[in-house]
Image (cartoon, rainbow, N blue to C red; front, side):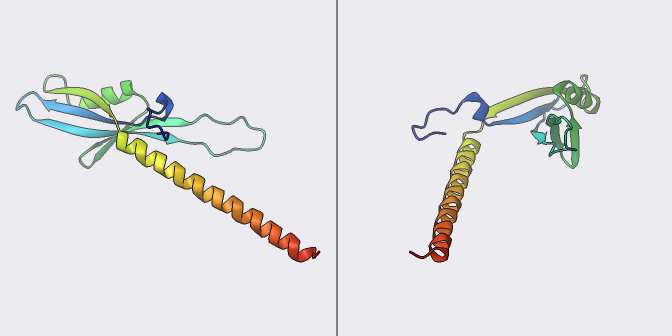
Length: 135
């Protein structure tokens, strides 16, 4: 977030996602965390067009991890695991303000580190040139 504490643009907002599974037989409810993983393709052969990033949905269900390429595929896998006749499945999300603050703090710390490194480089270059070219 910026220094005026205004909301960040939509592209910088962070959300938490989970799937709620309700067992219709006994009314019990479980919340399964859902994560979106971004797979970044790092380079290829020279001259090859860059590959777009991939996204994978990963749902953690006890010791089982369910992965899907999109929500439709995830819904199909959950429907097989938790059939309509016995379970209700709902996707939930909420804004993660703490996550946004952590990201803003991390970016600010990175900027400070880069600025210090740049200043150190400039000072070292000046010191080197002063010792190699005395006045």
